[in-house]
Length: 326
Image 1: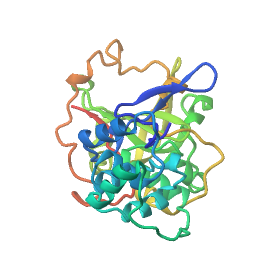
Image 2: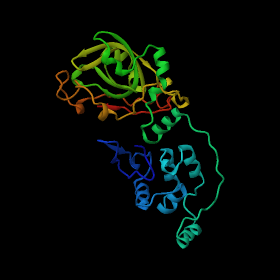
Image 3: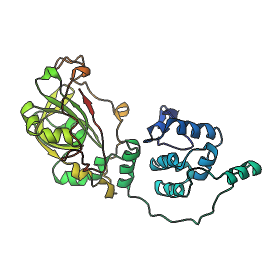
Image 4: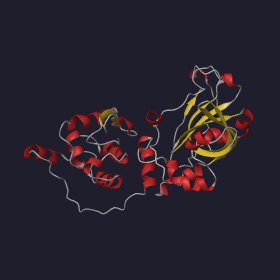
């Protein structure tokens, strides 16, 4: 469940969900650059009495406008009937700290005395794709939709199949896939082979990149967020890999998500869906006969090359940091 000014604590918590399962409520600690003391003050001042306005948060919790703005960036004012854009508009009307005169009036009257009464402003809604981009910027994931879901029509035109389709594709067939890079591993015992896990809106795919292919595509493998791949399906029991032959930087396409609203018919939550959908055996586990080495023994000396094609320059609207095992 999303971050909420009236429901989130500092840490992520469990709430009653539908039927058998509880829901995970994202905590304020997920909000980018929100300090622990500010989050604690907001939760403590809230107690059992929910906040009714953005101004009330500042007056009761005594935090600066910057902290409240960060929660607005994370779309945390839904319980106040605010969209991300209208919530941030209200934050702009706050001073860095409440005026002492109004604080004294609050104490005297026993209620919140508004510093100013502003007319309602009709703000145009954000595109769904832009909402997802802002989610990633403000708390590094999104519960709205997976970024690749907005691109599915374009990807289908390139004959790129969803990751979930691998389950129905025969061993030895050639496929075109695309996904956001989630994990990169290069075990010392694997003779230079790179293992990459990519994710789209339907699931994950595990890629095997031979040393020659990796060296020919080093900048692409190590420097981009969204990767296109043409490769051969390899199945062994329930384990499915794709042996990569050609790799392509598709981060430029990922950068277009912010201007899109056309979601594909298939919708799955973004990162962290493994608890719901599970996964098959992974030959990269410590017990695997293929590698037989633990993650801490994996080393990649040159992963921090910068962002995109040009080191140090961001070319994407959505920045995702994969897990790089060294």
